[in-house]
Image (cartoon, rainbow, N blue to C red):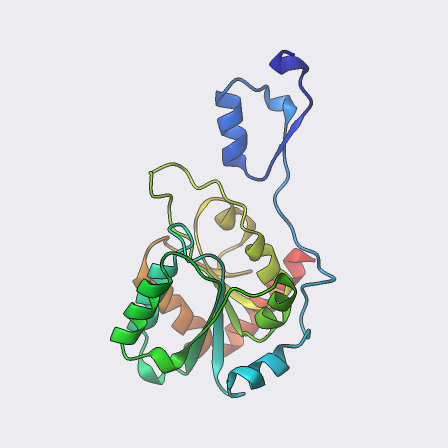
Length: 226
């Protein structure tokens, strides 16, 4: 069967569409359909208060969460460095949900910074637990990093849409589809990919200096996803 006669192909990002066009697939045969989220499953008020009590997070503490693989493009090493830059009195604790090749390195960076008590690692969890864990957080983090081989970032992170659906404030990398879906200073704060300094500053901006602004960002994110 010739390419022209093939059925339309679905991809989740514009980068993948461009790659198929370069490979000879007609543009009219390509449908870009980003990943999404089940808003009946991910929404505010779905057990976060219980999770906070179980984790020992006080009501006056800000909990910033990361969900994902501890891999090269998920930005966990940048996040660990950012955590090490935050002042002790910033009042932020961190929740890591997931596992992967960089977990030991992440823990080492945090231990050497003397901040192990500020960080909670729950490891891999069943997917049905994720909505309540996200709901327990005040701020959600998507610090994706550029591809290690230099190619263009092609991801459509499902967690991004899950974050938005929970109505929480978001700090994320200005990278690929992430920077297309989120609007800086409206539905999230966007930072330079791989910049621990910018990430730390954004976390502090949202959680310490501008708590009113945090509420604005979270409500806008929920409106956008719905």
